[in-house]
Image (cartoon, one colour):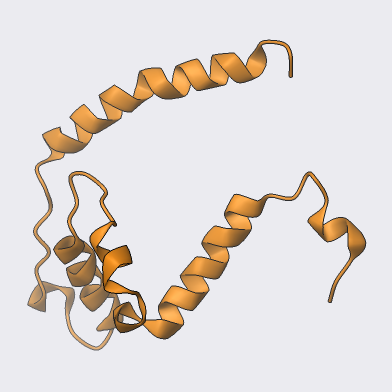
Length: 101
């Protein structure tokens, strides 16, 4: 189904891309993602191993969650990362509020 207004200037393209990426990623699995793209995924302090283990836990509904252990990174690393990003986000919001819109 296609409506002319669906792709107007007010379309939320980043959300649409995230949803489509999730659907395609779930269907092709890790093997379908090129190696160079997998190497570029980085979300400090989490690693690709963490995401792979998380996927195994979520994918194994028949097993008890205690059978598979996920090593969480030290919480202080996430706190440091978030404290660095707070000023960036605040400045971005302030800039968006100020004219010209």
